[in-house]
Length: 165
Image 1 (cartoon, one colour):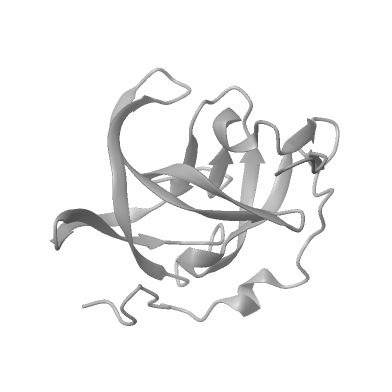
Image 2 (cartoon, rainbow, N blue to C red):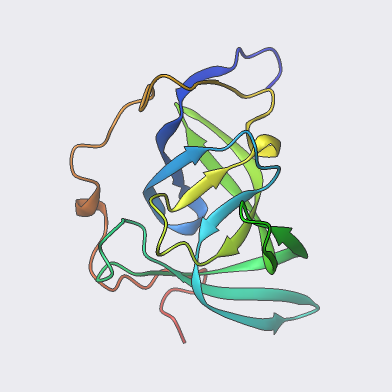
């Protein structure tokens, strides 16, 4: 970010993961969390060449289980992560670009099922540090999409190879 000023964001914002085919996801800025988390389910690890990869599905919008985006990503790590309730969970970690407030940068994100949560994404301190300033009294300072569901087709299958095998 060579000299760019941090972008002002609210405690919740719309973000994108362009490399994952996810143009609109509601995210909570979670300065209490170190790592970021992306809602994912049906995790299927597999080998591609000498690397470990993970295939996963995402319900990008809350209360829209008919919208499913499939993707594959190289596994960056596998970590034990404690949730806000202190429960430990083994999670896959991927590296991908995050787009927020007209900016784009690479982050690490753990994959976990957040179907019962209000936000599909939690952005932790590591992803936010030096890039954003969080205003906890405001929301959607970077804007809101008019109809985010129009960006998705029910049962979308998007992977690095096209259709899910």
